Amino acid sequence: MSYQTLLEHSNKMLASVRQGDWNSLIEYELDYICEVERLQSMEHEAPLDAAEQEQKRSLLEVIIDQDHEIKNHLLNYRKSLEKTILSMHNKQTLESSYRN
Image (tube, rainbow, N blue to C red):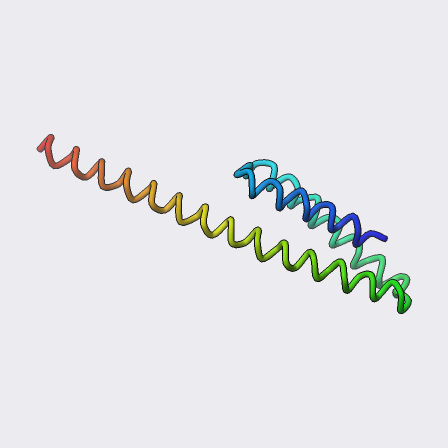
């Protein structure tokens, strides 16, 4: 089932953020999006039976949990970048005031 493939992409994305590998995250995210689009078109053509719906539900629960963790890592990374930028700005301001 292709939702298993979607989970595999999600696993790779999660591993990337845990390692702070932001470039790989972007690559895996593109694969993930392509798979989502492929799944959407497949389901329009051939609806899932009850067993497939249940498998889809359980896989999506895991994917959603992973998505929350990925978002938390991204928020923390953004906060880190904001602190770095603020620190650089403060340093430049301080250096500028000593030059004048």
